[in-house]
Image 1 (cartoon, rainbow, N blue to C red):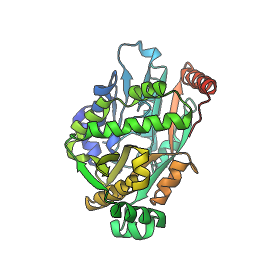
Image 2 (cartoon, rainbow, N blue to C red):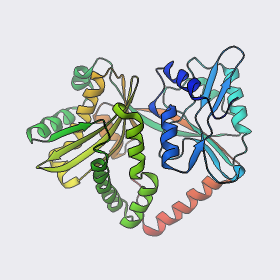
Image 3 (cartoon, helix red, strand yellow):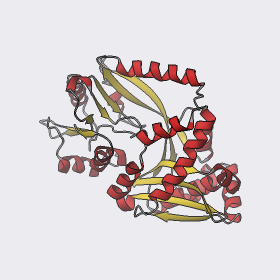
Length: 344
């Protein structure tokens, strides 16, 4: 085992696997460490038969080892599953989990995406708690024409046509120039979420600045350059909706979005942006359009399903010595009940 994982070997494994997402790359770790007070704790496992596995991990700087977490990844940074260019050997997987279980950290967590080799799930030791998620992905097989005809639901096609007829203008940028404009629209969404959830606006903005500061999006745009697209829709001369889409190999990832509800809803701008981003992903040869986790049957998951995405089971696993995560969740729950917070 080598830690931090040598970048050349990590990148070699990334390049050798079509399953790897942009959030499993060394560049993503760089973005995390440039945005938040974390340092590289990734681990490369090499075996006598030539197999290799990288587990992307970060740990918080400046704290005693046994009080901190080593995560892949911290909350709101997505899937940081182990990277391997080959079908994992059960012996290797057990060795990796055994090493992670012995790490001198209060918490160790790894988040796996849909379609992960079942060897990983079958080898999770009893020291780890398994956490279930539902991740939505649109299959782009067959190209955009097939997606448009057979996967987009009728209301989506109607919304796109109405948006185009309404004269919505769309600009896409891959240099990072439009990140501040995107972030301004993201702030509008924060205010809308706060109202929906009965959360004080100042609290909502404070929480989101900690989770999603402007520097986070600037770092990602700078690191991934052409692979990071910012889409902005303008309606009646005013910015109405925006979103950021990342691309790596056959995978496109819808990451974050923002909008001004009073402009976005009548113009159907968000739906038009998705249509254009999906069309762009198909043209680039992508096979999948990832839309993130959602609670099944929620309004967000219904929107994703109308675009043709399906919900797939995914999982994370967590080993914790002191139950700090559970305590944090209890305190957050108490605070939500105190202010009448409504989870969406």
